[in-house]
Image 1 (spheres, rainbow, N blue to C red):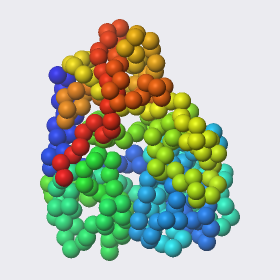
Image 2: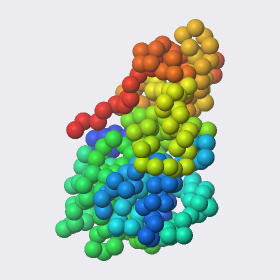
Image 3: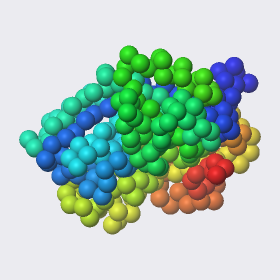
Amino acid sequence: MPVQYSSIIEEHKAVRGKVGIFDISHMGQFIVEGAGATAWLNRMLTNNIAKLGVSQGQYTLLLNERGGVIDDLIAYRTGESSYFLVVNASMIDEDFFWMASHQDEQAVLRNESDLWAGMAIQGPDAVATFSKACPGAELPPRNGIATLPSGEIVCRTGYTGEDGFEFFCPAADGIAWWDKFLAAGAAPCGLGARDTLRLEMGYPLNGNDLSPERTPIEAGLGFFCDLDKGDFIGRDVLAKQKADGPALKLTAIRYTDKGAPPRAHYPVVSAEGTVIGELASGVLSPSLMAGIGMAYLPAESAKPGTSLQIDVRGRLFPAEVVKKPFYKPAK
């Protein structure tokens, strides 16, 4: 087994079994505030911002006019008319440009990504780790946000399927806080382990499973698109797809036998030998020790139990469509 993958397995198991810490400087932070902030964000994002109470957050998506996904993000309500948005770092500039080009004069948008350092602490022991590193402080409830007396921001979300939180502090304090969480029991983990963890849960990765050419309806994320809240960018496309049914669906696929690890862009082949798509994501699952992946497939080929094959450099490995998630963490 390659040394790099052995390291990913160990980091993956640290999160599933105890607690791990990820550097999430690959995330960006936007502030939105003003009298028109709620109404404007509801026109920009798919979920219903107005349903959030103060200190609550939600998963949502930023779309183009064709209904394609520019980015997926978490939006937190920090006041009656103020919000904290956590976006993907690779999309900071594009997200900010898109939002600023549609900005409402009653909403102020600021990019504070350079001001914050962030880390995600994930795993069954995340709460205990927080208590050791931040004695006397309390974590917010699931999908909540809180500001500590010393100014740091804590968000109770995560993208691993485990309990956990994200911790944002002034950029200059990032290393010191990282060391505090390590001393409190967290094992350092990299993005390779984050990728295996999120894929086991069937969570999409922007740039792989989500793109400007694919809509949330095709990606199975219709739950995060409130078509009844009023107009928002891309809504008409989503409404039509929901009514008609999408031609393509982001589909969970698992090997039915041992095989070479699946990777993004490997062809997905029908049982009859026809190429019907390609993997958007793929990995050898450390929890299941089986190849898993996701691909956009024709709706008629996306039913659980459908037999498929994955083409790995000319070799075909048997697989089948399964329901998400691939793996359910212990509670």
